[in-house]
Image (tube, rainbow over all chains, first blue to last red; front, side):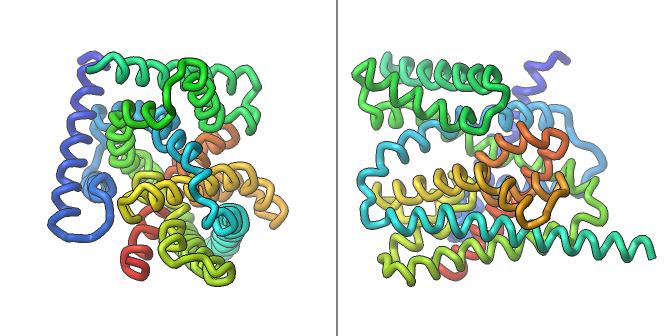
Amino acid sequence: MTRSPIVFVGLVTLAGLKLLGDALSHWLAVSVPGSFWGFLVLWLVLSGSRRLPKALSAAADGLLNHLTLFLLPSLVAAAVGLKLMADATMLLLVSGLLVTVVMAVMGGLVMSALKVQEGATDDA
Amino acid sequence: MTLEKTVALLLALVCYLAARALFRLSGGHVLALPVFVSVLLVLGACAMLGMDALDFVGHTQELKFAMDLAVVGMAVPLHRVSRRLGGLLMPMLLGLLVASALSVVGVVLAGWWLAAPWDITVAIAPKAATMPVALSLVAGDATHQAVAVAAVFLTGLFGALLTPMALRWAGVTDERVQAFALGLSAHAIGLVRAQAQHPAHLELAVAGMCGNALVTALLCSLFLG
């Protein structure tokens, strides 16, 4: 099988999982998007299987290589909408800058500290 | 497909490809990240062509569907990396829980400190989740959606620019942790930086982004919904 049909099969599978996720989101009545339920279902299915289908691998890698393109509509909308948000400017800056740096550093420190401890336990 | 839609989609593609080429030409400089440059190119091209930027957004909604498929596809790199994590799995999960909780609680505390309206605080709270997840967690009107998009964008921008520096300052030098923290703090924009800085550990950045989107969505749905 050549690469294009493989990618097509993978894309159709991902679209099917996205629709399944939409149905789950509607059925469970929680504000988690369908694409995320689709992601969870796929991850659980893959976790239980021995090998990763080539079609899924090719389609996912292709999509993830072009995230910037897919984000363009939302990013342009944000750039245009920035002027509408005088009320939120300070909170956006504090949250975007301070909270982001604190979360990244704390997450990294926790992971680093535990990694060192686990390494020490393994050595012992 | 209408002519305007075709032009808008072509414009998006050309600006994206040009931004990627500029990023390569710059030698991978962080200020030339395609995610910023492509937006500037689109805004400049819209001004030159006399196209309203909001019309561009309306005509390129198909790209959002592709983004949804990419979110589902994130399970693939997460699956690949989770098979190889071994002893890194528990530190990663705990780091993820601490960071996600700090992100949501930090926004709520900052909103309370700045006396921001509660609805604005709730729209900003999922800022570290990926764009489609964050947008689905906030109210559907244009202002709240724009606030959420701006929060996600600024978080990605500051996270991608400052996370590596802040981690080095904090003494965290392990490239795997740095890649994971980039995905965790700066979602898809962090992935672009991780791809440039730590290409061998890109899957850890994807794991950080996906894990944070999941935990943030659960925290926001359970406590702020």
